[in-house]
Amino acid sequence: MNTTGFTAAGFDKVREAFEQNFAEGLEHGASFAAWLGDELVVDLRGGHADRAATQPWAANTLCPVYSATKPIAALIVARLVERGKLDYDAPVADYWPEFAANGKGAFTVAEALSHQAGVPGFPDAIDPALWLDPPALSAALAKLPPMWGRGEGSGYHPLTWGYIAGELVRRVSPRSLGTMLREDICALLDIDFWIGLPESEHGRCAELLKPKAAAEFPHRNAETRSAFLTPWAAAPRGTTEWRKTEIPSANGHGTAPAMARLYSAFAQRGRIGDTRVIAPVTWDELTRERVQGEDRVLPGKVAFGAGVMRNLPLIYGPNPETLCHSGWGGSGAFGDPDTGLAGAYIMNRQGTHLLEDARRSRIINALYDCLT
Image (cartoon, rainbow, N blue to C red):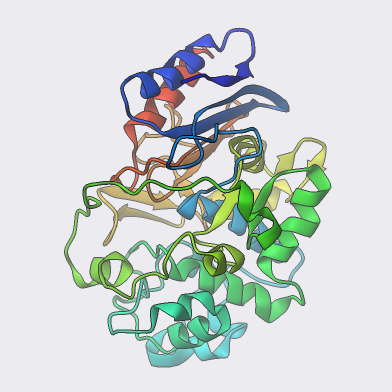
């Protein structure tokens, strides 16, 4: 395995940790990048993008990051809050009246974005193809009764979160969430990240290697079954239609430097480089804790802002104020507002843990060691 890319002076430990994952047979292809303020201090890649191990992981290899997409989508929602189009404290039903059905009328935008709305999935069977038709899926989602009451904590919404966020945007804007991300941020700042990937870019996508073991779910309750464990809990991943569909909770595609750069908005309190993505007061509202405690779906105690996880437990470095998110299979990214450090890890050999991945943690721990 040949590692390409670079580490800035003083960050050699990150390369060592990255290469150790390959030496131990834990990776097939992977990339890790970190920004310290406005300086790219780590940009590493290694292994192969295809299952047959014939194509090296390149600088422009795209990888789906699954739920690590959510905080990026949440930035777009925050921009609409800042412009007065949405209000975190207003009921979702103020913008999407159908969502009030079956007792959901009081759930606020912030509660829905912090996984408190009680609809983590569909308890009863739906056609999995419905996930590839966001308006139709959103219409079905709006009819569901909540699985728990308002104020009764969180239950992680792995996919439905994105349809709530996307429908809120659709109700108040002529442009979709993915279009706004591309036109207003990524194209402007030359960031290679997409929610809704044009077919012209599909040839750059890494091929995924699914884990041999089943994912480790801490609960076997109705909430977890509806979120993850039914045959209709998701559409087939990795297909052309899945990549093209805007799913703001689950199918962002990008490079590690691009994802880390977007998470710089969390590390720099709403700023990416010289561009103010959201104002500091909006950053405060997006990132402040909306709920904390035992989650009905995820393992242990978690804390959520309005679309971004807070670093509880401490799996993205030592700072509890870090904003972060993990993605299915092991991808993940973070922004630390105390140090200005933002990082992202992507790979194509998927693991089984929902939140922490040992490969990612090894690299991030090494990264923080370089700051001391």
